[in-house]
Structures are given as C-alpha cells and as structure tokens.
Length: 187
Image 1 (cartoon, helix red, strand yellow):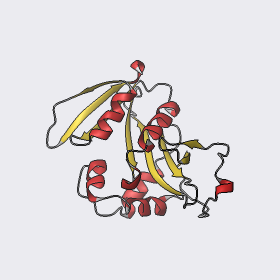
Image 2 (tube, one colour):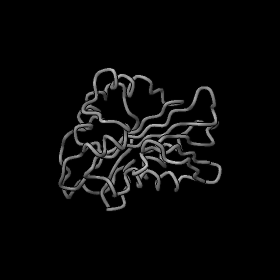
Image 3 (tube, one colour):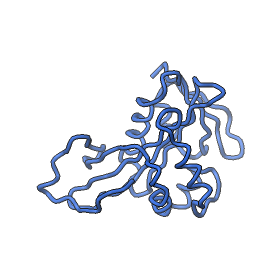
C-alpha cells in the first residue's frame, strides 16, 4: 500500500501502464497487498465510518489490533489467499489506498472461496469495490467455482456487487447477517 506521496499534476495525469479509470474517471492502480502493509491497513481502517466497519467486520470494531493486522497480512500467499489494494491517483490530488479486497480459498472445499471487499467511505459508489471484486475473481485459483460469504443484511452495495459476479443465492437473514453463495460458473 505504499505510495510515493507525490501529487499528480495535469502533465502527469495521462494514464501510465497498469493504470485504469474508475467509473467517475479517476485514474487508479491495483497491486497485491504486501507483507509490509500492516500499518497502512491500520491507517486506512481509520478512514472508515463506524457503519462501514460494522458492515465489513460484522461487529463493533474500533481499531485493528496487532493480532488482526497479523491475520490480515500474514496469511496472504497470492495463490490461496489473495489480497489486493486499489490506489487512486487523482489529478491534482494525493494518491492513496481507498480499497482492499481479499479472496481466501477454503482448504476443505477448494471449489469455494470467501471474498471480502472494503472501500473507504469517501470512495464508495465510484466503482472501487466492483473493480477489486473483478480483479480478485480473475486471479482466483482455477479450482474456485463459487464464493461463499456472510454479508450484513443491510449492506445492499455488497449484495449487489456479489449478484453481478454470478448466480447468487442467499439464506434468510439472521441476527442481521445473510449467508451468500455465488456460483461463478454462471458469471
């Protein structure tokens, strides 16, 4: 998640190799989460509202402690546990990470993977989550044919994102969450 911290000027605003445009026209890049990105994850978490934290972690979480950072970073192997970071490169603004997504293949059922996407509040609704989900699905292990995850029942954006990925089925909401399965073969 490291960025060079330099603002992009109008002259630098042309797309570079590896850049793409978000729905609102903002240039962005995606790259793998690095083992050294723990503190950057902790900082990005601070950009999330309490509602976004609850939607992502399904509980009241006030900070990412060292144990949580370790779980989020150390297990990433780029094969069975893929984590990607989306960094925006706004012309005239500061580049910064605004989204993180991960896909974790189930070791008991290799055809299934869990998926999680987190987008900072100020960048929600601009296509960050969609782009990250597509990138994860494109990089998934060949055996993965379906996603299985738990979503906050009120998180309509996540449910819509999953529905766009393939044939979605879900159980009845219980305690404010819903079990969701997405058949990727239909995508």
